[in-house]
Length: 122
Ligand SMILES: [Zn+2]
Image (cartoon, helix red, strand yellow):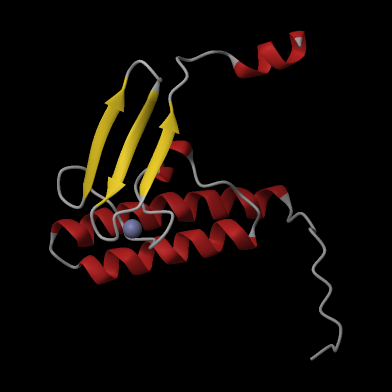
């Protein structure tokens, strides 16, 4: 074991990151399956695994999966079951309340505003 544990933000090769992304998707699919069959704890474990992979490989959890787990207690969330979803159309965000711990999360929804184009113009 090397004594120095320097944590350089070394980027993993692209192919590894691609695999990592795929695994995250798979883990969320498994979580969904387990959750629907009542295995909540197992679902949460898959979420945690997915988060760990995302961290280790420096990849982002895809946007559509970000709202599927609680940022605080990391529970797998299913709207209508253990999550309450409210849309604030005036403020343009989705409010998701985790019914496991009560944590509230806001997800702004931008209507397909080609972000990249905007950045180029700015
Ligand atoms: Zn929570």
